[in-house]
Every structure is written in structure tokens, then in C-alpha cells.
Image 1 (cartoon, rainbow, N blue to C red):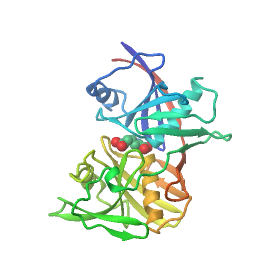
Image 2: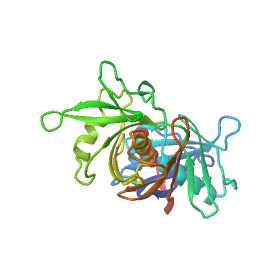
Image 3: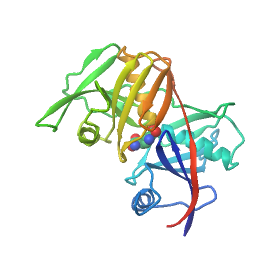
Image 4: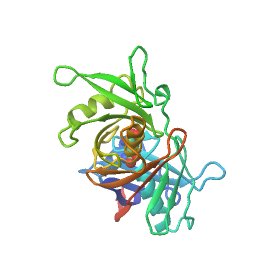
Length: 286
Ligand SMILES: N[C@@H](CCC[C@H](N)C(=O)O)C(=O)O
């Protein structure tokens, strides 16, 4: 069958976006993997699938697949691409859209100036619900946050200290001195697959430049290091504010572009803003 798609990105985090309202889309993990493959397929960090809403009061359902074929709960940069896609394709005329994801409802909004802001919902800060297995681990308080020691098999054995946050999907965030020198590619996979995270985890490396500006790299679960991670930016800013290092709003400089995160504190939703760009449209035989 022939599948039409749109190639998009948000700050360099790239997506294949598929309209599954007008097309039959029911692929295996191996097929998703092949579509996202940069040599044998179209190439992308994630595939975003736009479907009709299932529940009342929602406008669409939004499914997300990592480039390893796994289906996941959340994608912040993807949510902005999603809004641009449904708007450009004439699937909605609303500026505020209620979208079902695997982990709840998110509410992205197309602003009058064309920028897109996503209400990502309130972060989950209870370690067990991230999920993170803290049994027998001595975490300690820093500000309102808890830092957890995570032993990893790197350079003969190292311990990294992480904040754990769920933005619908799990994140482990550590503060590093210089993000460009941080061993993201070496330790990212070890943190991603650490036994303390039963669903695996996205590993964030944050350098604090000042109280309103961070540099961030994220080794994404199921996708490797990407040029930006929206939910990772939210998790890093939440951890930084709770640790007493940052004040909202925070500018997040990723390798692929800039994001802006605002958060009023525990129980409040995290607001994510940033770009969404269409690169090309295409058709592929699946
Ligand atoms: N790029 C994303 C997150 C995509 C999902 C993530 N890799 C996971 O497995 O949780 C974003 O912008 O949030």
C-alpha cells in the first residue's frame, strides 16, 4: 500500500506525521522502525499518528512511536508539529485543541502570532509513579527535590545523581558542568536501560547558564540522542526549579533550536513553546 506522510521537525527533533483519519494505518513495530530508518526508510526520531478522538470532549487522538518501533506516552515537540499538521491540512479550525495521548489529555494552542504553546499537564513527581524503583536507595533532598544516586557501569563504575520526573513519559535529569563535554552517548544508554526504571527512561543532561537559561542534551528512550526533546526540556526545568537552581520562565537551548518552558510550581501544568516546521510531503510504499 502507498502511505502519504509529512516530514516535520520541532527544533531539530524530526517526525514523520501520518493522517490516520483518511488512511488505514495499522503497522507492526518492525514496520514503524523501517519507516523511521534513515537509510531504508524516510528517517525520523518519532512517528506521529493523527487519529479521530475516542473519548467525548476531545478533538483528536495522537499516537507516538519512537524510531525503535515502541509506542510511547508523550512527545512535546511532536505536539507542536501535530498542531501545525492538523491546522495546515484543514482538519481543524480551532486554535485550542484537546488531544488524547496514551497518558492523558494535552491541550496545545496555536497563538495569534503563529507560535504554538503546549499545556503538557502537571509533572508527576512521585518516584514510584515515574516509574522509578527507589527501594533501599538513599535519596537526599535538595530544595524541594530528591536526588537519587544511580550507579552505572561507566569507566569502571560511576554514580550519577538524578532527579526523576514524569511528563507522561519518564525522565532522569542530571546537572552537568559542561553539556558539550558530558558523556551523553556513553552514559545515556546505561541510564536509559537502568534496572531502576522498569519502563526505561529518557536521560537528560542539563547545564545551568543562569537562573533563566539552560543548555540541554537528551538521550531519548527508544531513539538515541535527538537534537531537542520537548518533554525532556519540561522535566529538566521542573527539576531545576525544584532544586532551587532556576526561575520560570526558562529558555532551553538544545542542539537543534530553542524552547521556552514556564511552570508555576507543584500541581501546576508545564507550558512548552517552540517552533514547528514542515520539511516536505511524500508518499512511500509500505
Ligand atoms: N522527542 C520527544 C519525546 C519522545 C518520546 C521519548 N523518546 C520517550 O520514549 O518517552 C519530546 O519532544 O518530548
